[in-house]
Length: 497
Image 1 (cartoon, rainbow, N blue to C red):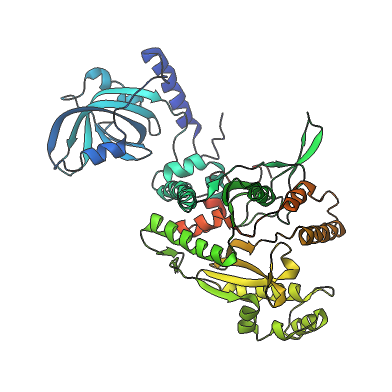
Image 2: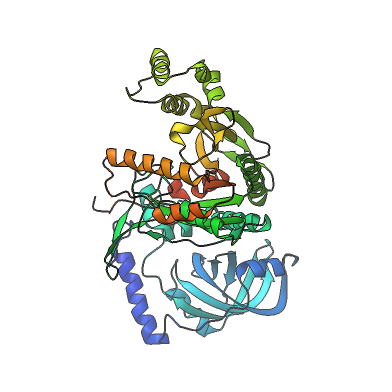
């Protein structure tokens, strides 16, 4: 039996439903029939009879189905909902046979029923079915939460998402919009000439990002494997192959890290690579994509998020990281020549930096501490330090910086992009250096991806690459305060913890 206390139910309420189920089995036999066919969804019905004037009855007989959300006058009036909307059901002795009306006392809020009857619109303008036949399709053994208040316990909303969506129109709309956004991303990328591929989720060597992986074991292969933390290295191998010059994947990634309002252990990314393009081409792509999605969801490039109004109308602000830091703090990192000078300048400005940090690490740290929070409207922050960007090409004339940008909005990072490194010798050198740093941090399982390096030796064309955090983007577009509001079944602690 389900946890009655968690559902704020009395034992009497559930017992009454169980008794009704027993009586229904005795009286009508099958309470959960395998076959039922409706002629119209509620949305289709509303569209078809949109022009039907009040106090008008048609001769049209239709069959509809849905969950009972309200019942009035001993079941004479019921509202049933399906995924597309609601319809009122009217059962009266003048229009509804006694056999059908006899079922009404057995119907509870939450039951799923099928109704066949004549379409009319009431004097008050309510589209209604005059019931001629009523069928029990699913008897609900648990009462629904109160419709107009839904689930007030936030954790319960995430754990019992079916109830959240059932009683919360905002949640229902948000997940419908999520589906639309994902379809919009896919359609936009395909229309732009990108080919969608699928790469492995189980990796024998994890890479493509710096993150703690989830580990598993393949019994037949007798091989430890890791859930994907990023698809990058496989997508670049696809680019090497010549299968396409423009490749993308909408993928689930898994990182064994913290949980917050912006982080979930499994999350959705859109990652793409574009041969013979660079990071400036990718900036244009991001702006066109974001503008397209805003128009699709809101019909305009401006939309609310909390107490702010966001604008996805391009072009977005573009600012090099050293310039952004100088504007906010006054520290001119481009005038600083050594790591020691960088640490001293940071300390003089009141920042606590580690004794072995490099020039680029100091710059990136101060950016995160002081600048990120100022980036409310969409902005591309460019020219990242090479120290923290091992897979991007250098900025011509400034070897300490690379052709990399991150897109920010509401002080959140939404995307990360490079002019991709394709020099195989430099690629190997940087990956070896990264591996040594990982081992020094205690990540002894991290290995060099020799299959990827072998592919790069074959020759990868110059390219621009991009990763977008889809969940955060959906948060913005749907005005959601937490990532758990846009993930259908987010990670959560066990109920006993």
